[in-house]
Length: 411
Ligand SMILES: [Zn+2]
Image 1 (tube, protein in one colour):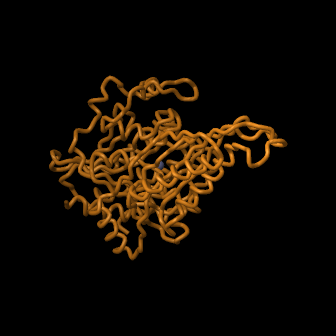
Image 2 (spheres, protein in one colour):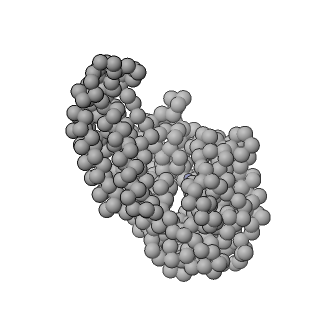
Image 3 (cartoon, helix red, strand yellow):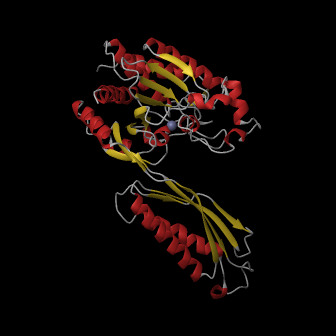
């Protein structure tokens, strides 16, 4: 291996001490003193790799390795060092630490790239503190929305206040934005956060794209009545109608065996929720994801027809509202090819898989070509202190990232 696996493992161990909860957990909220401390530690490693560092006005940590032709668009890589409140040691951290190791190796080998390389730890990828994520990666692309700075956390602190406390100048966002065309490509290494690689016993996966979710809220309304007296054929039972939709959704998304489509109903509110009143109104959320947008659209249509049929069968009225409708964003074919070649060189058979969760790469996909490397995580567990990827797998992923960087720099 060209990268230093031992050093990489030490960096993970050191980083996991900051915001540590329990034996293996992490709580590093966005724009917090703990995140600042994580930035300082990561900066010290970036400096050792020959990079200059700064924190921009969105609260992103940026390490820069200046190229001999700084006028060329930059090669950007990274992920995030903020964590879920009850999170693990690898989500986001892997993308930053493995990139630092790869660039350290580059410098140690005396390679002087023409293009400038940047490693970014993006601010507030997780989004739980202010209930909106990808803050830093959207910020640098000028894609913040109205009112974002006035969002508050559980303690009533606004994003604006948190950023100012972090040392950001919120009047100078423009200075921290990247101009169109100034980013050549973006690379993100991330733990899979799902069970596919672990089940298949493969350490590395090549991401095909990030599937955008379709989020619907469905309200079905019938008629309340006494459960002891209203005959079955006269009922307008909203919960029965909803139940048919929930079961039907599962059938719809499993039509093609082995396809990556996923559909879930995970919240349901029943009114009036009394054991001897027939449910009058049911509201549930529906989450549908697929890397194939045509198929997702077809399935959405089928779900809508099912809701209509179920409502008719039980004499219900209904309303479907769309909360989020993101399109899938595909990884660049040429970057996938390079990652694939690097895997082959190491004798690895790396499967292609889509990402159900979103990542900072989703925001960057609107600015440049991007590629992602997935690392196996044990039992697919993530957003949980039990999250685990082995030192060996992380080193392997870093070696592939390093080889990928060298080839991307040739372009
Ligand atoms: Zn993440």
